Image 1 (cartoon, rainbow, N blue to C red):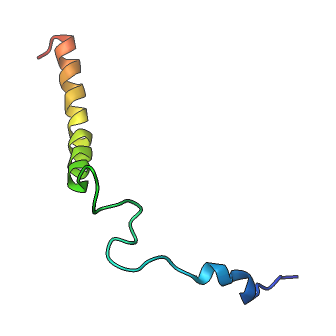
Image 2: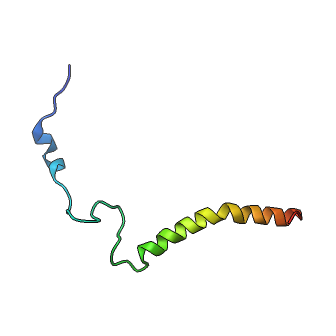
Image 3: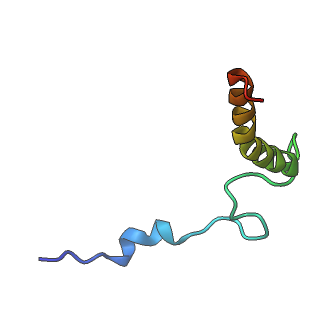
Length: 65
């Protein structure tokens, strides 16, 4: 009823990539054109300030500011 898995079918999956720091991340941290910290802080600043900018715009448009 149940099919068993042979070890020979998973040999190619037993390998692994390079070891070392930052090798487990899906993006490049070192030797970038734009430093990672700039992208990181820009992402958070834009994401945090967007609700405040939208609120300011809507209050200004309604004449309540």
